[in-house]
Image (tube, rainbow, N blue to C red; front, top):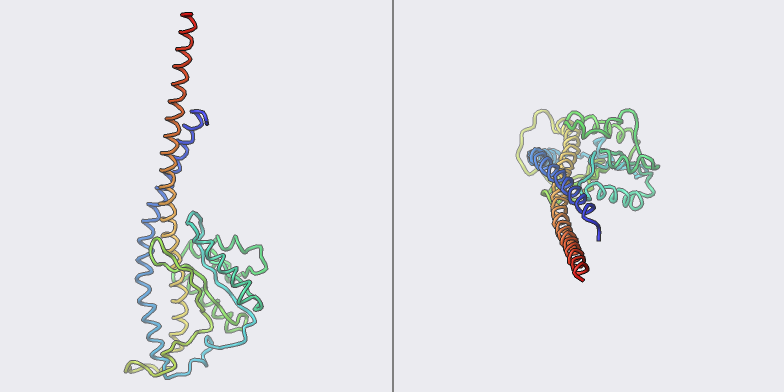
Length: 291
């Protein structure tokens, strides 16, 4: 059994850790509210924009659009989205595992590259042959230090440009979709080329007056839709990060509390045993003097 001083030091150490995890939980809870509001407000806009695009393009052949070109897949770019910090359970590892499965599975023979959005995924792939970066996308890795739509739009435009220039034949985004504070789903979405919706193969579901022409509207909506799609993924990931960290810190605080209780019980038992030994020694000494 450890001596009293060691147990006392462990109790103090666990108590300090519990204070830190409790504070981190409260900070993440405050950030989660803001991030959750952002993605909740973004989703209806994204859905409506996609609905408008589907209606407008229902009677058009959007396959002629540069961002809808279907080519033989010889080069793939995987846009992996994680956080800049850890202490959020399996949030980052789930993305890294999914990307590794894709690299060694469906895209194994498609010369895959990984664009890292977030420090944790960059740390995982920066020394691998799959790591992708260049001067124009150098700041993309630090997007979560300044997550704005303008910064997101710059990245989306670079991805669209590289697809049109045939540097990549397919671009997919891997991110955590926010469900609630305790649940995040790893999502894989194809950004480029654009995948036609079921409605686009039929007729327009609404009666619209178009100004200017349908073709011009589609040409304007498609780039905007792609930027919104990427931004939605980033907002989802940000909300998921805070939710995962809040849940992880809540569990860590509970575990620290349980450990502290066990240590206090262990300390009291050790203290009681020490007192009993001292009493026995005193009684034994007194008996020896009487004899």
